[in-house]
Length: 254
Ligand SMILES: Nc1ncnc2c1ncn2[C@@H]1O[C@H](COP(=O)(O)OP(=O)(O)OP(=O)(O)O)[C@@H](O)[C@H]1O
Image 1 (tube, rainbow, N blue to C red):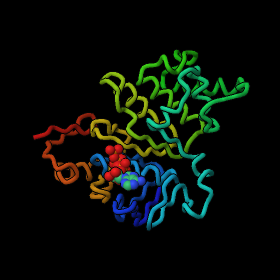
Image 2 (cartoon, rainbow, N blue to C red; image 1 turned 180 degrees about the vertical axis):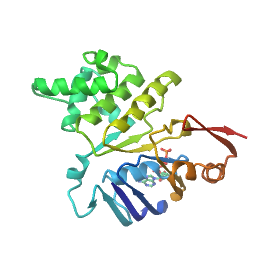
Image 3 (cartoon, rainbow, N blue to C red; image 1 turned 60 degrees about the vertical axis):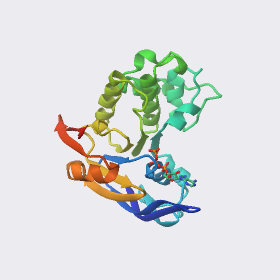
Image 4 (tube, helix red, strand yellow; image 1 turned 180 degrees about the horizontal axis):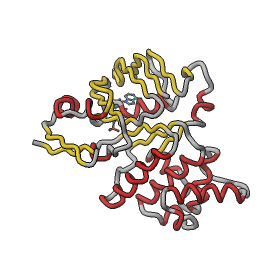
């Protein structure tokens, strides 16, 4: 699904990524963790083909970037981020915003076919937001907007779904609701690549974790191997106690 092979990224004097090698296979769901400025967004932008490495190769969905039309690959990638959320039209009905995901548009300027509306409503039902379908996006709570964005990403039936801090800004209730919906994505044949600052968001469906520190991967692999108190101390320079509860990691700073 994703193959980063000895990837480095430099911008002027800054070494943003330093020899990152990471393989994400089908049927795995990954979480990328790391401190502010460790290079997480840079990795996501590389996977989306918006940024090219200074050295190394990026292979996504069996295609090596630089040798293919990245727009073709992007059609199979769902990307959920705050910057995308900021571009969606708050004055449009939710179902219409969701339907734009079919083509990757930001807005429709023509009549929308009825079958597309029905599909958008089905995606809204999957994220349990059908009852808000005819409301305007701007009237939804932050959590509902994130769910709408997830429904929009699912319209194109992505092979890979990248989520950049989808729970940021959500209260406990909204966050848990969104996480339950994300956990239900294991019913679909989509590979998840999820960035967060909060380890308790690592829901049971996630299988693997990668830990970045100052542009270097310090650990990557099955979640219980990577999420150790020692690795967390190395990545965050904080001593923690770690416990697993209902297959989610919970940490306590000590
Ligand atoms: N175009 C650029 N030119 C110079 N430095 C850059 C550029 N883009 C990113 N950086 C630097 O690279 C580092 C990694 O940035 P990146 O946004 O990938 O980190 P991040 O882990 O996503 O951070 P956060 O958790 O705060 O979102 C940061 O120090 C950032 O300032």
